Image 1: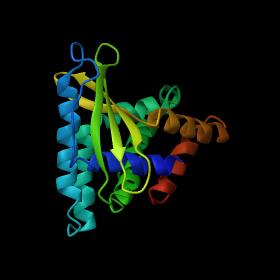
Image 2 (image 1 turned 60 degrees about the horizontal axis):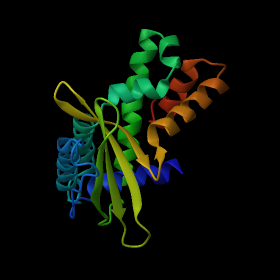
Image 3 (image 1 turned 90 degrees about the horizontal axis):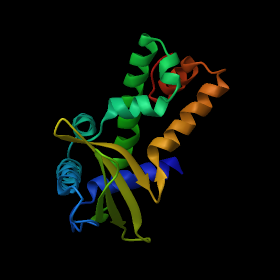
Length: 205
């Protein structure tokens, strides 16, 4: 299920050939948050719809796009939850590095599957004091539409994605639960998760 949701998120980020911005609450919604999602998608499609770009170059571009659009350090800490404070500084640093590599590896593998899906922005509303929830709908050639919500946070006049919800399921919460399960199976030791992440990203132990 997580793999399918990751693919749909990638499809959403890439599928921006027909966007229609329609804020759900015009008085209190932040139109810049929706524009941020649109601009990010435009950059993604210009980069990854060209299948002649070598994979290594595409991955490097994606890494830059990831940090441009997502608050990766924040997401990494949040996903680790209460175990962040129990990790040593060295473990925290390695975990953040592996978390980034996991995202890049997983998402980059999905980009090659892009097959012309499109999406439109169907809502934009505040979510707390500093966040916005930009609601989009993926239109697929062979299947029903899929709803994807992007939680965007404004900080220091910059916008970053801090979570993605596919059909109401939070990617951040799903990852947090999976990581907590791995740590618990390792006796509550963060090192068990780090070893698992090393294997996932293809690093030596």
